[in-house]
Image (cartoon, rainbow, N blue to C red):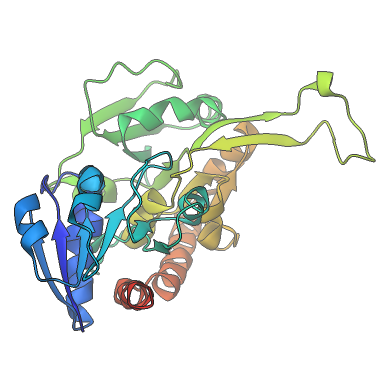
Length: 327
């Protein structure tokens, strides 16, 4: 097998793209028998004798400078409007893969985090006096609570004791848009050393992911002939949408409710494995259903089985290597 050199000038374990697509992926590839090394030096990458070089997301601009006829150079999570044209691109979802269709070779490696793979970290659900609803992710996603989740939490807060636990990249972010008016909200800084235990304290995981999802404007009119109805939806989500935040909850045994995006449906499309939501009522009904600890456990267990079936990281790493070899 060929040797792969990963170029990552930022090797912080707190950076998700480095942690998953460089640190973890290199380990998965080694399990397949592929020789891998990681460098933070563009000079070392340029002078490397590796047949394959993979540049981190932050190092995309360096890719073309180190390309030559003796090697294949790829970029992780390349921006859709980037002018860089590497030999291949690695993405984390079908949404992103489609958005980069103007590139010749776009290969999928889902965001499977090794740090959550251990069976030592798996939730056993119990009756709770206060239901803890967990969110983890960038503070930039918090505004997306505004499209149904915010309203559903406010409805539920009037009926049961609940707590929203937010684990985010910037705990000092002034959260305004989308912030629910409920009694108990805890915001904590994401930390590599504590995030697993923080997440395991949650009973339900929520993954808001849409920019807007609203009933069609009546001004557009309705027409059965044209397939337009008042109950239709207009959906907008990022071209880099993915199920990575869902995966973490699945791995830890926490049932998930997520906005309706393509990648979420691979597991949550089955009602035995979780819920997708489209508006305040669907978020509310899903949250209310998961108040029952037995339902939480059953759905979490089903989702974990499906996750393990669909997302074996070593198999995905082998598939990725094979696709690169075919170029």
